Amino acid sequence: MNFRFESPWWFLALLALPLLEWCRRRTAREAVFVYSSLTLVKGILQMNRTLASRVLLAARWMGLVLLIVGMARPQWAVGKTPRKASGIDIAVALDLSVSMLSEDFELQGERVDRVTVAKDTLKAFIENRPNDRIGLAVFSSHAYIAAPPTLDHDFLRRHIDRMEVLGEQGTAIGAGLSAAVNRLRDLKSKSRIVILLTDGQNNAGNVPPLTAAEAAQSLGVKVYTIGVGIRGTAPMPVGRDAFGRKVYRQVAVDIDEDTLTRIAERTGGKYFRADSTKTLRSIYEEIDRLEKTEVETHQNVLYAEWMVWCVAPGAALLLLELIVGNTVWRRLP
Image 1 (cartoon, rainbow, N blue to C red):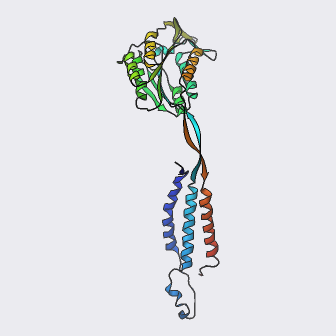
Image 2: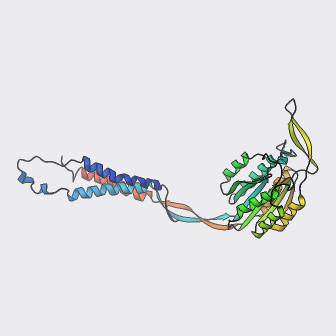
Image 3: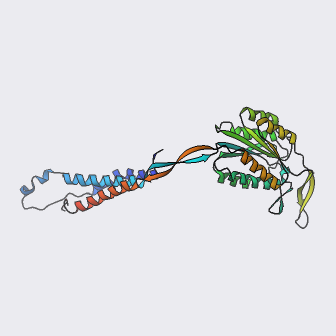
């Protein structure tokens, strides 16, 4: 749009002008002269409103209208600048099953669980994609939509900070992938991708992972899969001892790499294995490099203010009405 009002709610003040005119008429007094003989002012008594008073009244209301229009800040677009946009929509399917509490990663020199590292790297990835719509699905034994695809990345990062492991048993990889793909179904972007992160095997839900992959393939959605967890066994916290220290038991890391690889290959994506914080970060960086499809758009960025062209004439009319009404065309009481 080339023309706009920055503060259009000022137009509500126009509704008060008829009320002001009504109040003026109710409180106005007729100008009166005292003469020894009415024959001296016989012609004047036939005039209810002189031309001068009409002109002054018109100047007053025109001035008020121009002031209100000026306060609404009329603006005209005078320039456009090119802006790069990626044209990519992304949905992340994040495993929040209980096994994601295994503490086989490090962050800033401290042992942390997989969920903490997954959230930290995902937020960094989002920060590097300011022009992408990004949505989020989470899953354990069921899948849930955590956030629809959005450009409000501050909201998305705050939502990620609040996420915790779901209190469910089982991992429904197929349902999680299906939920993420469905978020992209109706979007008409140039490219649509899903990033699926999990640490286990599909053992819950009614949607087989490869069936969800077929649906993604038919919709033209590319899926990148990430298996997260060290090889062998990982420490799982099971409680605390009498001194408040965490107690661990070793659990097997059982990632279905074959299925994750087939999902990625079927949709034109790629499978990654993340066994450390550094590796997971590099995976997101590689996905970021692989999905850089830039298109050029134009955006109005510079508007010329026309406020002064309304406020200045409006103020001048009100000042003129005040000066002339109290000098040349003054009404005598």
